[in-house]
Length: 296
Ligand SMILES: [Ca+2]
Image (cartoon, rainbow, N blue to C red):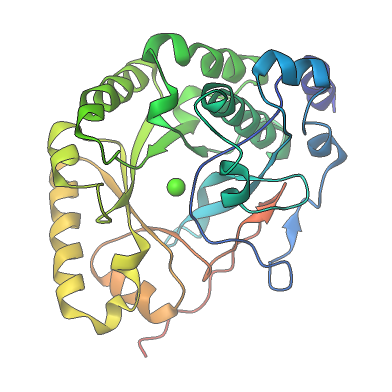
């Protein structure tokens, strides 16, 4: 409780979150929330109008969290933080409010909010891992822009190795060096890194050849019906092999069926995210299901 009080007292930024296209939550089907909408989490929303002026944001926001599970161990590996409106508006509605003038403040506030909320939602003394999406274009200088993240982690007692930054490679070639500089600085600081949406559009082999993150998230389009698509399985098999050689953990995201999951287990994948386990939970941690996975 003292932690909550400290967070409330020191909580400046208008909170926000991540630009992820991950699946939206469905309240009708969402698994039980653990714990249900803590008042301490509510208190992290929005911030006062003065704080909003300070951060350059003129809107409030909050987060939903979707677990990434280690299936064999039946444990939660991390929670991906996903931006939402205070009224549960989807990430797309919030991102529509972001422009060149406020993207830096938005990105910074998202990080701070994600770390603070995970700290509040975690069991006492056992902070969960959090995976935060970030906008490379909102980072003007990697070292400077990471400072508030490090300060926030220190303030709430979050170990830096519990913080993962995931990013989709920008389509603009000139951003590559900037993104690499960010990744390297984050790693140097003790944070973990992930390439998101690997296999989709611009998140590709060139980035992987230039930088080897801690984690690689396979795009959900590659995953969909993979049990019925031999070419997709062969491609994922090769990616898993490359990642094993490079010391990178692979996460399969967007898992919806047991058959997809079984096919991916057979390919050596251990970390999963998707509706099969849990939908994003608004301002709380979802309790994932670990369904029996038949070979249908
Ligand atoms: Ca993501």
